[in-house]
Amino acid sequence: MAIKAKHQRLVLLVIALVVLMGAGLLAAWALRNQASYFYVPSEIVASPPAPDRAVRLGGMVEKGSIKTAPDGVTIAFVVQDGKARVPVTFKGIVPSLFVEGSGVVAEGKMQADGTFVADNLLAKHDENYVPREMQNMTADQAKQVVADTQ
Image (cartoon, rainbow, N blue to C red; front, side, top):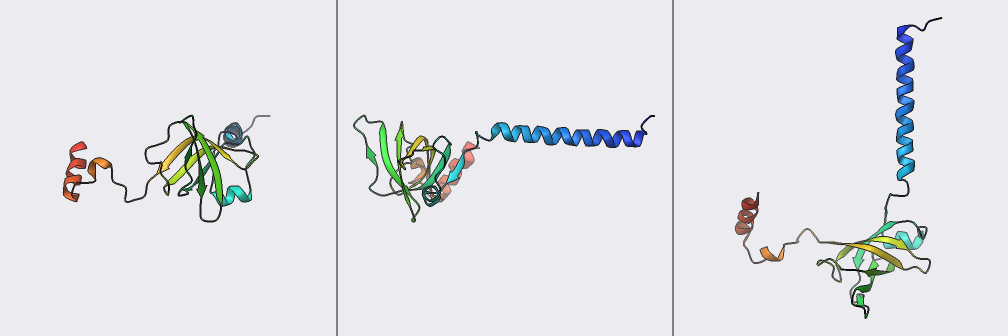
């Protein structure tokens, strides 16, 4: 018994949808460990992630908390959000915008002792940021520089 052309198209459409859904689920399953979740200090203190899970910790660098180790490349500091504090260690070159009181996003893993070990630091600036080269320029001069570079 032959299947009508109308039913054939319906069967092919259902098969295509099942294949697409399967591919999407397979991709999501393959990438599940690659996702980097974002936490603020109060969330990470209340519900710490598994020690082997890569996460991002975002908040403000507490004033007076940056300490450089004797090796010159390891730093320790505290990230806070006004509700909780998380000690962070980082080994490497820090971004030039990384200063006390500024925003930071640290990528790394939480240790069992409550210390966050960062692999990468991303310093954030506020909306009033002006590059050093443009700090002494008037608004018209800055607009001209931007227009000349485009």
